[in-house]
Image 1 (cartoon, rainbow, N blue to C red):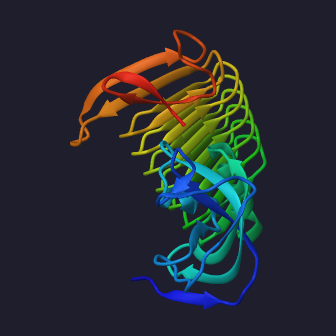
Image 2 (cartoon, rainbow, N blue to C red):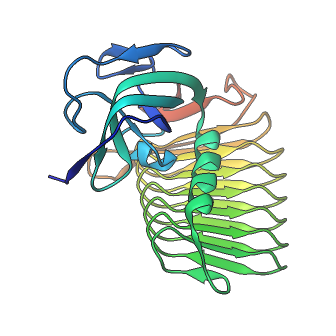
Length: 286
């Protein structure tokens, strides 16, 4: 078992996952309310559990079936030795946050703590690589790394677990290949790909393409005329009205048993709504 380290009383901001009913292990939560735990606090055992790094939440709550919130923790704290999981005796649920918000928060978390790399690549844990020139390439291969390419036709790659890759220029490509990674392409014709387990891909620019190929991945096309694809097991997609949506359904052996394609806003498919493929049909999920 990972080492556990007790910390003095303090207040921290963190992120918590819930099921579709805003419950965690049968405990009902509400936005704006404070909750107190009586008794000892021990991470993975007792207390209110969250993660300080936003994408670590996806390790415990899958993006295709969960809801998330920004929370404030206080009182007694107990920290996990392997990731940023924290247990506390007091918690306040501040606001619900969607996957796009989690990705943005993850990028801000990583870059604020990163050790800048020389040039446009970093292999260090929590490393940050950036390239703002046209056709530039930024690569962060370490754990929880952040790669940003902001110039025209730039490429950003985060290959370590929990990495965040952002391509904000037109024709940019962002790839997060590690587990729980987040890829965002915000410029025109951008491409965002998350290939690891529980990855999240978002294409917010005009005609962007978001692809989540790992199990429990989530793909969002929020820009005009975009496309979102989830080809892994139990993946989900959503898109702005007029965006193309693609889903694959797999059996327990990962064999594809059904595929589906549709357009948000057509044939009963709601815009800005999550769908996954079940028994060959797109099913709305929270």
